[in-house]
Length: 156
Image 1 (spheres, rainbow, N blue to C red):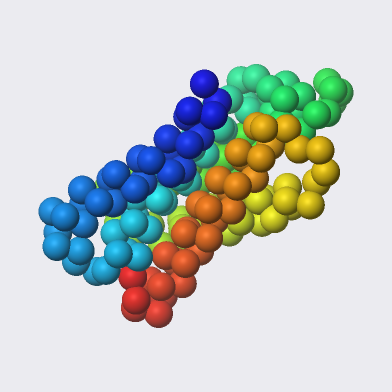
Image 2: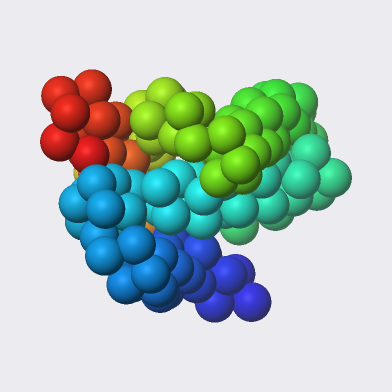
């Protein structure tokens, strides 16, 4: 279920939503803008919102299954990460209704995911779940930051 959800929210849903929205608007604002909005909504919003809820309610999944830390003390920091994920995810979901928020959320959420992905990258002996988290963090991070920078420069 983890793999399906992560791939759906970080690859499939943003691509499909972007193609539909782009086709309906004749790509107003350009492809970076159209896809950026939907990567913010799905890849940052829905994904981080769900991750936040999971980390708050069952921190042991993240600590044991993703980070391989088997220590009850890790629950507090994982839950605090969950509060941050929940907050950024909620703002990203709302950004589809308040489009002015999308570039800032793209920068904040995309920057977070890009840095997290870069942090995961050199870790040796990653599990399949860690690889999926790492690669999708990098993908969404690059798109989110590119969208934010493009918006700032007037290209998105």
